[in-house]
Length: 70
Image (cartoon, rainbow, N blue to C red; front, top):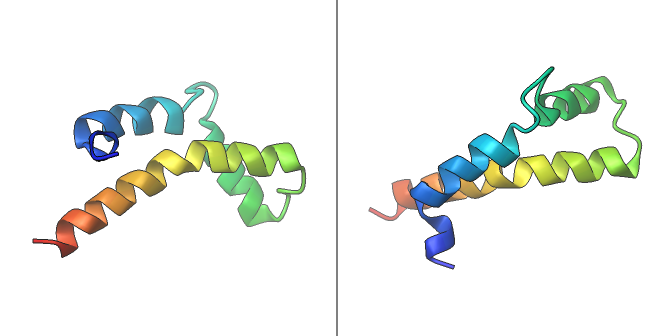
């Protein structure tokens, strides 16, 4: 588990899975816009948001952990 939380692993995962597909716009951006507009109703859209958001959450946890455990 410790290797999973290394930056050399997390940053590529965030860039590729978090922002995929890159064109015309990343799914995470599309799903956050749908959430803000109140249009995130389908279960596949909710799953898609969770799937593209987990790398960002894991990276945020790692940054938080590094900043608080000095």
